Image (cartoon, rainbow, N blue to C red):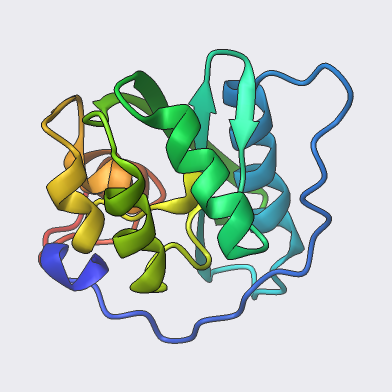
Length: 178
C-alpha cells in the first residue's frame, strides 16, 4: 500500500508485542495503544522514520481480533452478517523522540450471509490473519455492500492520514519535502 503513495520501505521489522486486550478496554483506545506500542518496540536510529499500524474490527464494544481457527472465523462472520460494524485503523510514526499518531474509523456493512456464503468464504482461507475474520480487499469484498469512510483504512493502512503523519515527521511524500 505504501507504494501507492511513492514509498518503498528500507526495512520491515515486525515488532514483538503483547496484543492482549486489557480488561474493559474499548476498541478505539485498544487499537491506538497497539499502534503506539508497536512503533516504540521497533529498534531504529535517531533519524530513522518508523511506521506502524494496527487494525481492529469492533462490533459495538466487542473487539473481533484475528480468528485462530475456521470455526472462530465462521462465528465472527455469523456475528457480522447483516450488520454494521466499525473498522478502526490506528497508525503511529516515530522519528527520534517524536511520535505522532492518528486513528481512522470506518463503518462497514456486511450483507446477510447464508451458511453457504460463510462456508465458501472460509474455504478460501482468506480469513487467516485478518481482524474480524475477513479482508475487504479479497473475496470478502463481495460480502460488503457499502462502507462509510476510508477503504484503505479497512484494508489496513489509511493512506491519506499516513502520508500526513509521514510528512509531519519530515519524510518526503512523492519527493516533496514538508
